[in-house]
Amino acid sequence: MNIPDGLLFTKEHEWVKIEGKRAKMGITDYAQHSLGDITFIELPGKGKTCRQFKQMATVESVKAASDVYASLSGNVVEVNETIVRQPELVNQSPYEQGWFVVIELSDEKEKDNLMNGDAYRNYVKGLAQ
Image 1: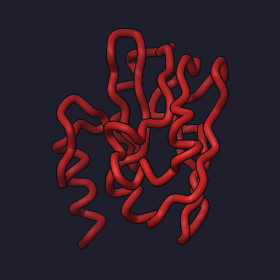
Image 2: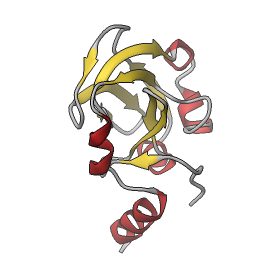
Image 3: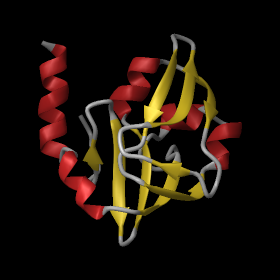
C-alpha cells in the first residue's frame, strides 16, 4: 500500500495532511478502490464548519453512495472544485489531485484521535483477513 508520508488517517478511510493551522482532507486509496469508479462528489461550501468524524461530503460511485467524514474540525477555506467536475480524479490520484477540502483547524489536539501511516496500514491489513 503506497501511502505518502506525513498523512494521518481515520478508520473510515479518510486522510488529512496538516500544514500549519490548515489541513487538507480527502479519501484514501483503499476507499476509492472499494467504491469503484466515482461518478459524483458533493463537497461542503467555503465557510462551512466541519466537525471531526461527522459527515462532510458525499461520494457516489458505480457501486454505492457513501458519506465522507471530516478527519478534523474546522472551517472550510478551500474546496477542490476540480473533483466536482472530474470526480474520476479521486480514483486516479486520491492523495494529490483528488483532495476534497482545506480547513482552518479549530482544535489541533484532535489529531491524537487519528492513525499514522503505519497504524493505518496495519488497520487495513486486519480488514483483509
